[in-house]
Amino acid sequence: MRAKTNKTRRKGTDVGGLAEGIERDLGQIRRVLRKPLEAAVAKGELTAPQISVMREVVRSEGISLKDLSRGVSLAHSTVSGIVDRLEKRGMVARKADAVDGRISLVFPTAAVTEFVREQIPTLSRRPLEAALERAAPAERAVIAEAVRRLRILLDASERSTSGGRLHRRAVK
Image (cartoon, rainbow, N blue to C red; front, side, top):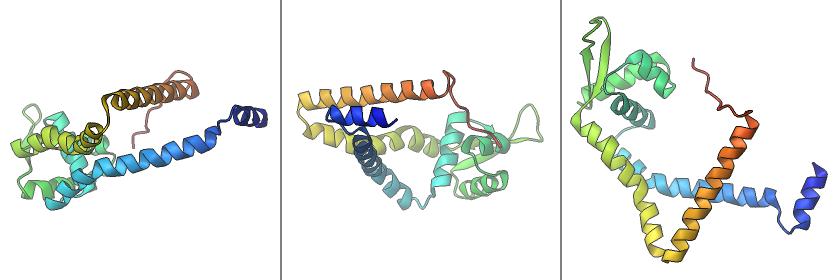
């Protein structure tokens, strides 16, 4: 390992320092991209877990509490409480499963579906679009290519460390 570090430094590139700087920059980018969504969520007095539940309910269009709990990686009782609060606010509705009436499924309201499908992506993308508008066309192309290349390198690194298999998160 030492030889590789020295070899890397001889080339004039400290990979560890570079990675640390990129990690710091990516963290700041994520914070900036989240701000408009967090502000919109705060106006609606919603929590991050409630947003996660709403996203999963919209994605699934009729989901049981058991599957919803698994989908958002939260305890069944926690998700049940979140759904209760969202239902009281008219954001989701519970309906009996047509196949098995003992099971209730959670459905999003039209307003929640529109918010999750339209507003969340727009809110998240707006700061990035504004920044790219300030860049020259050549800079935009360089940024896009660098980000794409980094993603490809990270994907290849993940595959090589997992033996070609994607890691699956353990389901509780």
